[in-house]
Image (cartoon, rainbow, N blue to C red; front, side, top):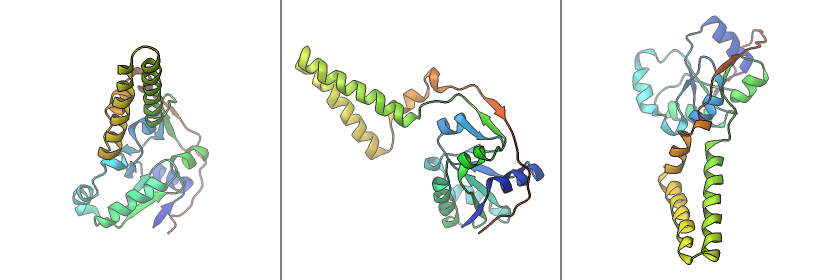
Length: 191
């Protein structure tokens, strides 16, 4: 699999600002911090076959993939290769490495991840249901059962209504600022 270092990517983006860079992290992660040129297409919504069709006339141009640390980027690259796009390049170390190297990034408000928020709220509801079931009326145990059933459904269906609701909350809407301290050095893409 082809990879590119953050410094090499910075050099490439300076030379060609129209370079295609797909960020496969969740929208919440993307809004917290991302490279300025990145386009957010979360891994769970990436349609590799459709992307291959869209790039059918221009398969020779590399497509750069980035995530948080490189693992999801590697999965996305493999999906794209399986769909017929063979010139895909994963950013080594992902967004974390790019931030550490001082590349230009757009920053939103730091937030607790959506997954953690769901776990916190679900835990509060379950504890509340149990406490009220013992202290007030046994019917409150149903609240805990309802939340447990919802979590089970979310795991099976890979769809979480609570997560979708939490994503729309004001604390998950971040103002955006740009920071940049680029270390300019020439490097090459490695395989």
